[in-house]
Amino acid sequence: MENHTYDFCIVGSGFGGSVSALRLAEKGYKVAVVEKGQRFRTKDFPKTNWNLKKWFWIPWFNWRGFFKMTFLRHLTVYSGVGVGGGSLVYASTLPVPKDHFFKAPSWAHLANWKDELLQHYQTARKMLGVSTNPKLTYSDKIMADLAKVTPNKCPTH
Ligand SMILES: Cc1cc2nc3c(=O)[nH]c(=O)nc-3n(C[C@H](O)[C@H](O)[C@H](O)COP(=O)(O)OP(=O)(O)OC[C@H]3O[C@@H](n4cnc5c(N)ncnc54)[C@H](O)[C@@H]3O)c2cc1C
Image 1 (tube, rainbow, N blue to C red):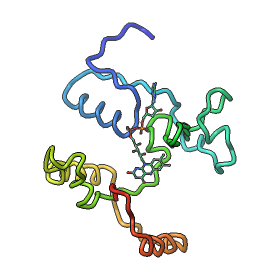
Image 2: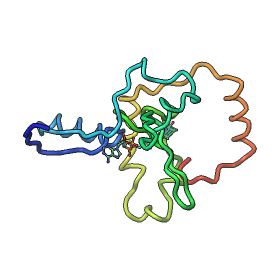
Image 3: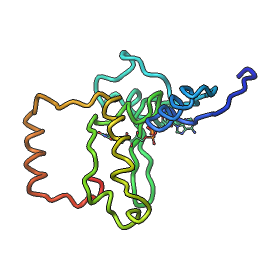
């Protein structure tokens, strides 16, 4: 790289990194964004997940797709690699958490999170263009029925 001077260097161009970079640039700072994955154009996306080389990020095999799995002892983490980070793989659902998430004992005492965060959810919804999916498929219906009979214990939803 040539000699450049930046006010901020952001590592990773996912939802967090790219929004931080945008906000800093809007404030007039000179910002560099460093991203380890490639920039995907429409034609670079595989038509099927079985195209493992284009799908998975496993540089050891020279597979430089955009879907990464990180195996930890008790946990497997899925993430996106490339310009856009997780936006390359995410499912495009943008729920606002329900009240019990904001009131979780781990952080409820720190602030009124619902009031603090609501405006930011609204900004994200606006910027990402949230709209209601007009077409529900058979599998959507199965999942909705399943959600009704299986009360969700996950604190985030
Ligand atoms: C399959 C899937 C479906 C999902 N569906 C949804 C959904 O429907 N709705 C929702 O709200 N969320 C969803 N998520 C979660 C969402 O994608 C993540 O919460 C979000 O991407 C996290 O943003 P982030 O900025 O923290 O990290 P990321 O978006 O993961 O960005 C991190 C970036 O950093 C880069 N990077 C990492 N290490 C380095 C390095 N050393 N040098 C340079 N660059 C580096 C990575 O390549 C990546 O681009 C989904 C996630 C997955 C995996």
